[in-house]
Every structure is written in C-alpha cells, then in structure tokens.
Length: 309
Image (cartoon, rainbow, N blue to C red):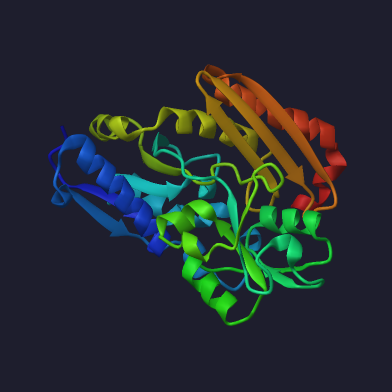
C-alpha cells in the first residue's frame, strides 16, 4: 500500500474539480484512507487559457491535457484525472490510461431560452457550442439555425446564455449532473438521433507506466465495462485520426460479455453523414472499434475528409 500522499492533478474548472473529488472519494472508500492521504493539485492548461478562438484552430483537444501530462511525467503529480472525451488517442511516451470510473449518462443536454426543445427554436435562432460534433449535428437537424462558437467552462457558457448572447446551448448531461445542475436542462437529446462524443460521460485516470504502487491503488476503482466501452470508442477515433478538428460521434454499450457500437462521421455543415455499427465480444473491444473506423472511412470515401484539416 502506498504510504505517501497521492497527488491528483486536474484542471481548475468546477467540473474538473468535481471529477477529481469523485476520484479521491472512490480511492478513500476503496482503501479506507482519510482525505489527508490525497492532495488535489490544480494545473492551468492552454485549453483553459485560450478563449478567443476555436480549439480546432488553436491546436485541438491536447491543449486540455498537455501541462497536466508534463506534471505527471516529471513527478509533480502521481495521477491525472480527465474527462475521457478530452483525451487525444495518442498519449505521451511513458503514460497510460490506467482506470475509468463508472460512466455517467452519455446524452447531450439542451438548455434553451427561446424554446425548451432544439426542434422548437424559432427559425434563424442562434445556438452556441464549442464542439464541432454538436455544431454539425445541430445543422443536420436544423439547417436554418445559426450556430456560433461558444467557448468557456460550464459556468461561463451559462452566463453567456443568461446574458442573451444565444437562444440556447448544449452541454454534456454527465457534467451538469456532476455539478448538481441537472435542473437547468430543458431537453435531453436521445443518443440515437444526437449521438455523443466518444468517451462522453466517463472520467479517466492517467498514470505513469511502470508505477506499480499507483497502478495497484487504482485497480479497485476501475470500472471494467466502462473501460471496455472506451477501448472501442478510442480505437474508432484513432482509426479516423479523431481530434477537435473532426465531427465524430461514437458510443459503445456493454451488455454482459457483448459490446454494441454505433459511430458516425459528419461534414462540419452537417449535410453529409455516414454511420457504422459493430458488435462482438467485449474481449475484442479495441479491434471492433478500429474496424468500425476503417469501414466508415471507406464508406465515406477520401473526398469526405478534404475539408477536415
């Protein structure tokens, strides 16, 4: 058993801190340790500081992990807690995703002011979102809506919404639930028609490869079905070179020893979309996701990706 204080690295937003606190609580319960056995270390990331342009222009989702991973590699922290959907598919050498907490609801939540439901918004209404996937799906469902880039943490986006900058916005239901803000949701969007981002709703923990004491400490809080689902979804992303530049959706469900996956790629304007399904044993989760990625890439054709870079 590790006796030193375990340092947990995290971003400083309210949601990131809630996720770090949940991780700490699960570790305390699993090992009968007091809160003092853990230290939460807040690390400012480039993604938090850059607010004047879309992440796709600034460098992609790795901007939310770079500084935290540097702290992990040089030993300033022992583990890093992330939102799985923020994680690039390629990790720095020496690091691994060693645990996943049990996944929350994967659905996107609409918070509307001009109307309670996305479908009921008036024509030409303005909706804010920083996610290319959400932007593309909104345009697919409502081509008349004006979608604008909406950066910032949850509280910042809600403030902008209350100021009337937009008629509505979308956030992950999981994040709102973790912040006890589910009461502000005006519509939960079905995953079947508004599929989530790969990894959405799942907290992942990153650690150093070869750190046996930390790996052993994390093992009891790893939720195997979530880890299996994420192995599939991340392999799907990797096959498509997924980043913040690409509108990609993907969701794997685990039922016993079987996995069922649905993925979608869209053009940024939402006018063209291609879907793919896969199913098989959970033991083949990663290969099922990778194969689904290759199949949907072949289905779309090379020209589909021309506007993605």
